[in-house]
Image (spheres, helix red, strand yellow):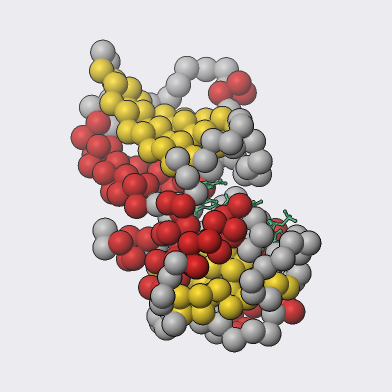
Length: 252
Ligand SMILES: NC(=O)C1=CN([C@@H]2O[C@H](COP(=O)(O)OP(=O)(O)OC[C@H]3O[C@@H](n4cnc5c(N)ncnc54)[C@H](OP(=O)(O)O)[C@@H]3O)[C@@H](O)[C@H]2O)C=CC1
Ligand SMILES: O=C(O)C1=N[C@H](C(=O)O)C[C@H](O)C1
């Protein structure tokens, strides 16, 4: 039985994971951490990770970027593997994640769904053919009105996957209202829409002369992220220090 510490247990994702883990025979949530502790939970909940003294095997995190520094310190101190799903991390925090991964296993992924992780691969093939043929690349993401970060971590991961394939020669343009010139060839435009309860929608557009190819992924429920996170948690238990990704879990 793999015992999870659910970091951000009372948020939208934390609650979804709590429900999904109930149907698991090989995993359970042993403790939670959340800034919001005014609701009853089936497991002990702490209002700060430093206070958590429950024995666990893996930490699953869906919280907020400002909580990630303390989380990394805790995982390193307790030698705990970490499934890091929070998005919107700063450059400094990303470096801290790399440093921490020298001490513990860290699986960092902006999107735990199978569909997006497959798309990360498919886009490499598309970019290899379409970018040299002069197609412009644009990404549009849509999310609910409670989301803190923009653009989404997934949009950035999709752009990075394409850019890696193109020798990292492309730069990202987030706000065209400030760009008083025509689009450059080697740019990836990234636009964010926020509204209502949209769970998550990502479109990658390759626009050529008289031809457009679009890849679209839509999450209709947070369960696609939650199921991926639970699988990742089970996968990471007992793993050696290092950086892992969802490709390692789903075999991509
Ligand atoms: N990788 C993936 O597949 C996915 C990633 N995400 C990312 O996960 C994160 C959380 O998303 P979501 O669940 O929708 O957000 P929510 O805001 O619904 O949940 C976050 C929870 O974390 C709590 N929190 C705040 N500070 C701390 C702290 N110091 N320690 C522990 N918990 C804290 C919040 O409490 P309070 O509200 O009181 O501040 C809240 O309950 C976001 O960054 C989002 O982008 C989301 C979906 C999928
Ligand atoms: O905040 C969300 O809700 C989501 N965040 C992730 C991101 O920033 O990419 C993943 C998913 O799209 C939902």
